[in-house]
Amino acid sequence: MTDSAKKHPIEDLIAVMAALRNPDGGCPWDLEQNFKTIAPYTIEEAYEVADAIERGDMNDLREELGDLILQPIYHAQMATEENLFTIEDVIRDVTAKMIARHPHVFGNKSARTAADVNAIWDEKKSKEKSRESALDGVAQALPALLRAEKLLSRAAKTGFEWPGPEDVLTKFEEELAEMREALKNGTIDEKADELGDLMFLLVNFGRMLGINAETAMRDCNNKFERRFKMMESFFKEKGKELKSVSLEEMEAQWKVQKVKENS
Image (tube, rainbow, N blue to C red; front, side):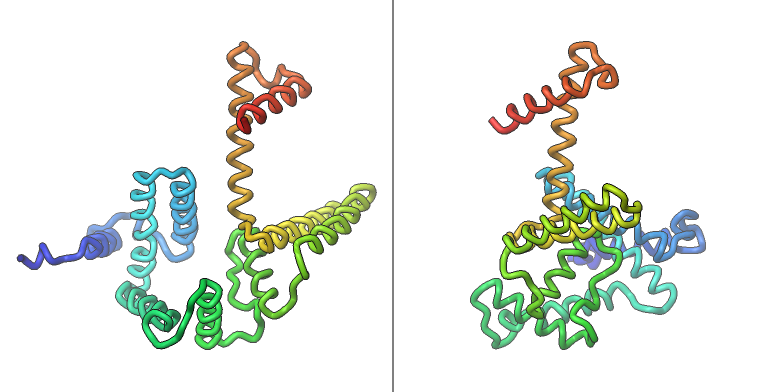
């Protein structure tokens, strides 16, 4: 077997990225990029992977995973140029981390349930990272709903937790009353504050039920989009633009589409 036959495909991708960033003959666009300009693409690619999974499109998932894999290689190439670290360093570090955080697989710890695994993970993570607060380390750049869930989960592990979901709903009703009051004479900032409180409580309610708020919101967005397009198509077939259709007609057709979807 030749050396080229033994080479892992990822080595070719690393070489391609190095060539794109080569000042001598590289790509002008890639040469202009830095960590901050590439970060939005990293986030976007992660969302596109999640989207392909939710749609069940495995061909698209294969492509999107490739795009996502490119991102750490891109960042590592820029880091290599600044003598910070290499892609090999990144891979070695994450490999060591996974082994250290799974002593029930690679060591003599015992873990019979997923809850046991989570407890071991948290214990190892807290030892690795020195934090003054239980909430330290929850990334500011996370989507707001996801960050809220992580903050609430961290707080719950300290015992700062409602007894049950019903208690969260009771608090939600209190906050809803405050929102109604703010609607009467509150400022836009006061209304925004009350809206944030309501959303935060709903995230907590979902978390206590084992429902991820970010996923639930994406599913709701998809459902709204699907039903709206069905309603839109219904009126188009009748030669009507939505702008010329009354709200009552649209609501009636919306209910029809909802019944069709649920039947």
